[in-house]
Image (cartoon, rainbow, N blue to C red; front, side):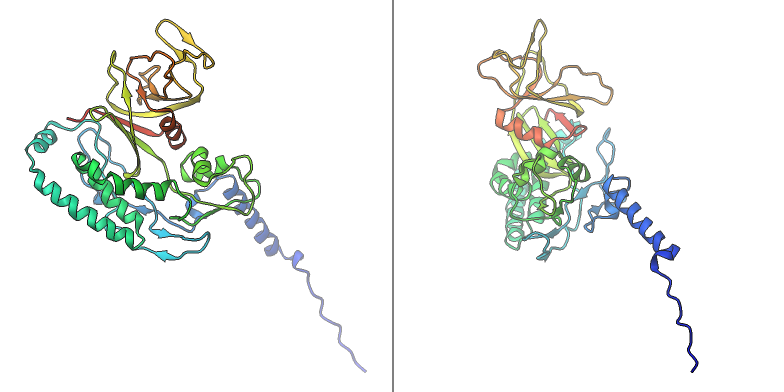
Length: 351
């Protein structure tokens, strides 16, 4: 009886292709984990990119910039996409420049307020219809455009606009990007950097203790960064994200030295700051320190400023009447959590 020798079987570990696949997987995981490649290669959502030629000409002296917007996809429950909303027809919101040109001032003073009032009625009705259909992003976009184009109408839309902005940027009940899943070893700081926001904002948004995040949990995320426009005439500070209205705060201004106008950025953020006055230095523990609990230092691109910034209030201490920007303690606390180092801050004097 003749028998045949059974064919030998090569174990998968002996194939070079097997080990090559393993090496590729480890390299890809390491590149994602340590942020060696762009997030966009691994994140399934995409942000709307505005081609430069689709943008209106920038104001004189202002560099053109592309805008990225929140994706129009919404998620009502973690990891489950319930609804896809068509993106808006245009994806660029123009934020007021630091100083209006003389031509703009003349045009604004000669304009008829009746068309603006008609636009208010049409826009608010369209925004309400979008919100009723679940498209809060589209509704906030319409109201944000009106906010920047017609400052005289801001009080009329503040109720609806604040309600929408609060739901999008400060409540966890609805997601506008797929929730971020926390992996083993993740830190809130590294997650925040991927979305260009602060870890303090993610903790505030999701009600988290940053030292006790758990692997496998999901959190709400939104794309940053947040930026600010300070209107010295109206004494307001408006936080926006890519032109979308986020918050408006009332500010107090120094009277002895006017605040500078122009484009600035956040260069430092300090809790319990030391006060460096013209003639004295006051420690953070001293009840006479006028800065409150938070200091957000600002400077221009050339770094020509020293000791200028945004801070809170200490009612028990005499206030420094130089050109600082002062907010209530609750407001500056929230602003501190929103603005990243490098965030743009525009200071303007509207007419």
